[in-house]
Image (cartoon, rainbow, N blue to C red; front, side, top):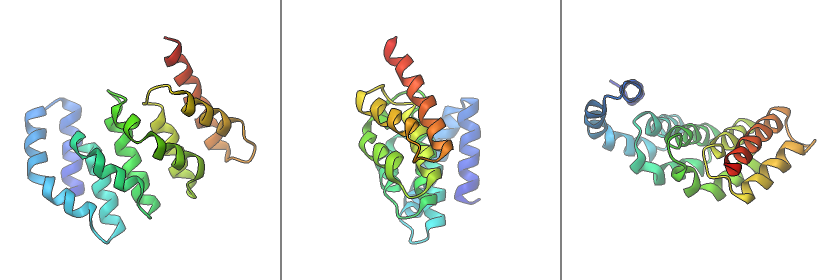
Length: 164
């Protein structure tokens, strides 16, 4: 079984709530995941960063930070997908890397990475700096249309969160 296959199985176990089996699978694959995240091959790193979310490996948020700073857009994107998944139940993972998400959302050279960073910000706490950034992106004619739309949606959602 490959890391990608194990991660897909882990995702299915997590979706079913099979915590014991998920914990056993995490223990089996933790070292291989760490090794893949340090690989010189960007494809292996991207699989590893994506697997962190599928395994629901909350202890690996610092490893995801490395993925967010990776030279490869595929790796940054995979790390963002995992971060979004890990932050659905709690804003902690997003809040811990918020400045980095702001940088990715506002200036990453890859538009898909920028949109993914905006989507991740949705799961964080509604902080003023984030709202200002998202509003600016949403209103800027210089930005990609999809990025503007995503930024507007997330800004509206965070404003509603803040009003509660």
